[in-house]
Length: 478
Image (tube, rainbow, N blue to C red; front, side, top):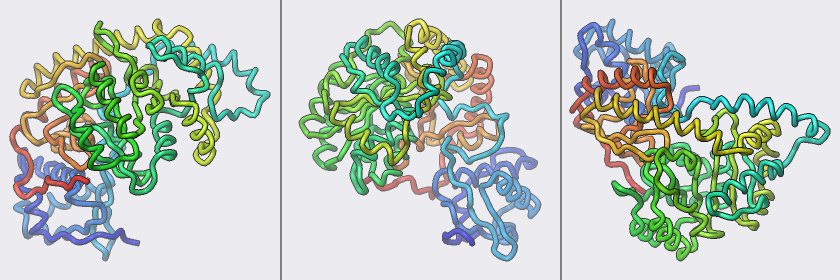
């Protein structure tokens, strides 16, 4: 069965491709592949679109049939295009979760995931967890709240940050994304609006859409959060929920000041809008500036806080948590069985061991991230001097302003140079951010230097090219 979708003519495809030839004649098929993938990644060739035949393209493109055949063969090999004899060819590959066309090439330097490798302490924590496992094997192993020892240590961590917390306010989950999905399931129904920052974490936006909610973006200012903008959006959109990343915001790296936390919390509470605070990156402060109090210290029971071990310790643990009022915790637990029956015991014991002395463990991560950040800053200054960015005080990535609206083009072409990136529009609700690019610094210094060196080559090749003249970038905003 063929996918639904209209057919695009050869003449229309040529207009969309625009000035697609960038390299030498022998690179012509690669340039055509990159241009086609750009159209798919940007949504101008949606999945299911029927493509003109190779013969028709030969008549309208100034290249040989051999070049077109080679390009289509590569697109089919990468899963972007599918063909069937007698039925023609159509677009079959959507933009992947990492932001580029999905490919199965493990040799790429992956800068699409701003997540580091495991700390060395994770190994000894696993050994410690193994010694504790026998006492749990006699039970059924299901615990929708999470192990008491882990909930207590998470609560202690909040208390150390100035937010007294009871273990009964904690629910352990399988990562922050799972926690967010549980909260959305509780608060958001089909058609409900969810206020989000623009830009924001792509997977959080996808989770809103998966819950049949409607993300409503509030653009961030160059130096932080627009409290007046949030207040206006609350009046106009009447959202059911709000989602914020106040600590080393992904992707901008900004941290909300105490004054803004107090002001924004007051605005949300006045509107009686519950808000979810994602603290996935909160432990990754890379300078000596004082840490502001958590948002829940200002918002009280209106705040649901999400935490995670993925950035601070290791994503492979799949450990996250929710901190909320007793009422919200009770409601979460009453609906959780429809999603899952609890978080694995072993991983919880590993996390409990890591939180036994949290600062000594996190010190290594911060030192490592600080060194990698400095390498990335230096390498970008050398290889991409036209890109502008603020050096963040924490987090795991640089949010770079490019010298033109070429983010998607760079992300697509970078794959031909062995680097995988997430284009800027993936961080926006309805497109935009085409002049921005996130560059994570989670690889080793040697790999970072190599990756950014390759990016310099790509950036030079697309400098000032922008999009084809007829590209429609004015997407509607709900």
